[in-house]
Length: 232
Ligand code: JFE
Image (cartoon, rainbow, N blue to C red; front, side, top):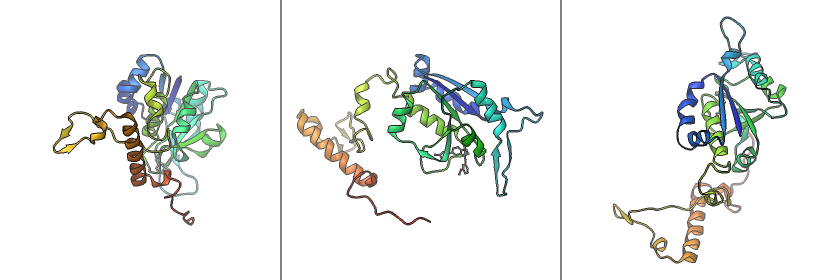
């Protein structure tokens, strides 16, 4: 897979792309990542990438010209560009699985109040959010998306079996995990996990996953969902 990232802060990506899973996937040639400075696509002597928003209100908006120029310089062809935004479709594991089947991703990271809407409409971009909270820009969201997608590329994660077992893949949160020591500061590992009885272990894990889901994510369960709230 090829991934190109357009940003005003290319330095943000240096550490994350060198370390751990992303670093290894790039090193192994399983994913190629290009990071491009949107400011390199300005034409004016001040290299201006932002401007006041029409209609008033606080904050600056990323101008469309350097973003269009940066995207067009890649020659994306049929590939749909992705714009990270708190106003995008919320990223899900299902979406990550779809993105992992694509051969080329182009991720546009805004800053300030975001990018001019014509980047979205004019490029027919997909707007994606990584959750209902507001970051200061798209870079951290792009890294989260990239890591979620990269770990699904065949060969990136050693034990591919483990991918199907985890949270969301089976509609529940993951069950709790324990390792040595058996007793840590008086907190014992649940004895069933040491019993060697695989049927009993599977049943304990199912129940523990259900308890955790009820506690942390009741919205994932058909029963305990809240009735719909009124619109603001
Ligand atoms: C940008 C910003 C004020 C945006 C209403 C570009 N899930 C997610 N959270 N935050 C983002 C994504 C994100 C993505 C791109 C971004 C935030 N900002 C900051 C500030 C209002 C905004 O949109 C700029």
